[in-house]
Length: 373
Image 1 (tube, one colour):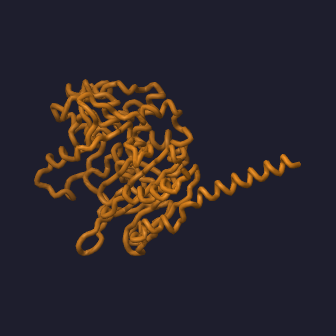
Image 2 (cartoon, rainbow, N blue to C red; image 1 turned 45 degrees about the horizontal axis):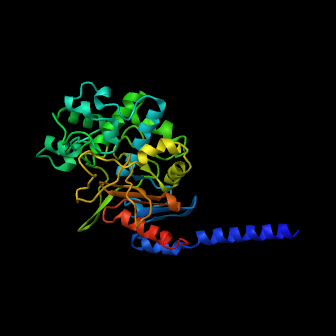
Image 3 (cartoon, rainbow, N blue to C red; image 1 turned 30 degrees about the vertical axis):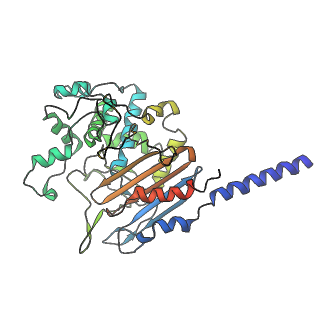
């Protein structure tokens, strides 16, 4: 009997300790971080916090659409922009597991008509931004030199590939330097189509979104599908808000064309945490920082960068981190994962005047600073 009482007391103490650990940060503390985004007549943001395997916070601020003033909530779908890249990388990783491609296959293996400079560019180079491919956005603007940006026709992933095929060289030899490349991820989407025999959006749906029950997440293709619970992008002008939802590059899927919500991204986070799609060993290449042959990977500002496949791997205040931001016409997004701390923060915004990473890290600080030492 005594042993039972002791065991029951220990159990109760564990339950109480667990409850206290979840309540270290209050909803009001997180709300305070997003306090200036709660207007009912302005675009805003949605925030998700997953801590110790539980969704401890998800809330919307502001409106998804300035025409109807529909409120943002956990089901609202935002364009992820470059946050998309981790999904594109996951498609490639699935095809590697299927044996339909290999990380050291070359670009020219899939597109024999590609210029000679593609012979040295591997799938791995495309994934970790060491391909040296020219920026398709710059190439597109050069193609329409006297055309206002809002009059330039939208380009698709196949169009990106064509633009690159019209070039005679890359910016630098593959593998020698690191330079963030939207072009590389647009090409990866085309390689996924070539290797799988399926449209990129269909492959995403069948191999990632459907298995993970991410029912409202999709690669948006105008005229082919519709985004449910859609947020529209906006920019702040001198005379107020203006809807700025699409640009000439908004239809490219591989580098930034996915729409998703807090509800679905919580499922994505769980899949990463529980190794639902990939075993720990299969995930390892994506979490291995690239080492260019000419020296450490450097960002434009000269800072050192750790990048894997669709993930920045730079630590934050000595905490191990996986992260990625997204920024495009009318949208700003971020995912900040701290795997050793069992913490994930996602912020999705349909306005361009805020910094989601900064906001997410303010929330992360609430948890990281309150952890028992």
